Image (cartoon, rainbow, N blue to C red; front, side):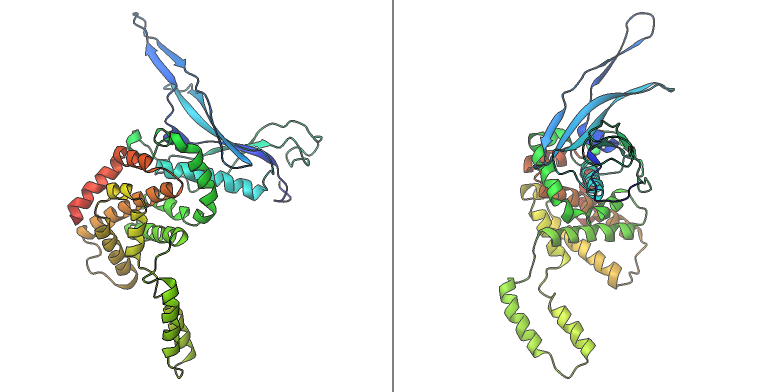
Length: 374
């Protein structure tokens, strides 16, 4: 039991997850059969060199590949990728350590584009400092065993993935600047921590189309508000207009009504959802055009449906056409959000283009978009 969150208790951690395997795509086990009359299989494991990146002046990430065996029926042999983050100095508090675990896990979640099962987490105890809670009788400087960290798995929903064509992005597509991408991801995570839970909810393929659509639209708008600015006119010009509008308000109106009007005047210069979505896609430059050649039209449909769900009772809400359009728009926004998150994390345009071309899920969505919206 922990008595305080202020005391550092680990110098690093290691995680193993299907999400990492999906992104890394390891292949280090060769299986062959004998040509004799006896049926026999020969397995050979090809060791692979680990990959290391320095994320900042205190964190280093290492990816290593190891074999895993299952002696049940049937016998299984595969490779697992282990992501190990080590703190070179300034060991983190307990809550900061959990935040770094979540940061790394969510990167692989976005790279995979879907839930693939729970994550196994192992902590590397510190060899220095105060006595640790698990070893209160150990002396200073003693070497401790590794600890397995048990976390709630209530939000994990295992999902099968048949091929590498339905990933968002793979290591091979960003291997030339993987360290820079992971470093930027950690720097941006504090600004993304309230956006990614919305993405995770959508990625789990919730059955309620309306909630799923509203959630991903909210995530896109929140991402734009955090990293971009969109106004109808320049802020310095609007400041003068705002002063005149406030001065023109009648003084004999009720106090509550006046406060409401003053509040609305302060936001009338902000761009609408259509403009925000278009700016996010335009920020991808050539990749945005490859992603959705006519995204402005789709953005208009998104804005109209969002306004209809929040302000208008649609008579055709449960029509087959409505279901098709909302489902397609949700998938469009999900792909656009994934590409925007990667773009903000320094994934290069060449890597994004390669990811878009290999992703069969995107191709199917684009075909559906052409069928519904032209």
